[in-house]
Length: 178
Image 1 (cartoon, rainbow, N blue to C red):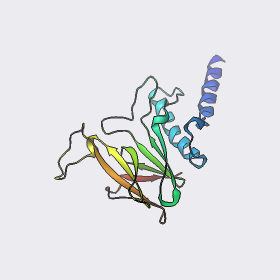
Image 2: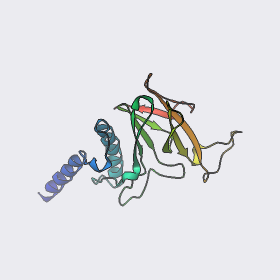
Image 3: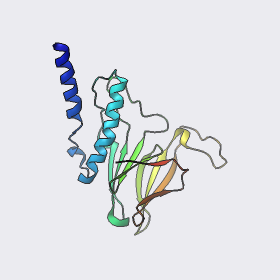
Image 4: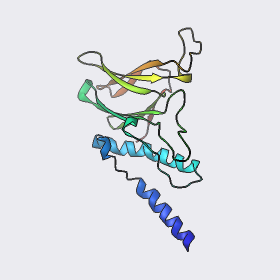
């Protein structure tokens, strides 16, 4: 009986955790579902790393950034998944950064690891600049670049065509079904 009760409580905690209170992040309401979807993937992986004990990852405001692009006034929510899995550490982070997601126009994009910075380069264009390190960097001659040094890539949201544009190699920007 106690074993069943423990299992029931664990399942209840796990399922109730899926509806998180993200209000402290001040996210646009239209992005909350996408943010919860991404967090749930990491909650699940964290629990699997801890023998399927229902566990929530630990995150802070620093893992999230909300920015308004000039083009179309489009709101972007950026997530750097450098989350902590309590009792297991930071399994998704390393010298090449953490997985990075951009939520734009209700769509989720996973980019090559890198912390996003936003730059208004004209009266009409905001660029999303991603900081990279580790294996994501190459020198101009194709040689490996030191892990301890940064490199950058730029992304552009074309609001008219509703596409995220980059010169990056195919596969470095992946749209995730929402």
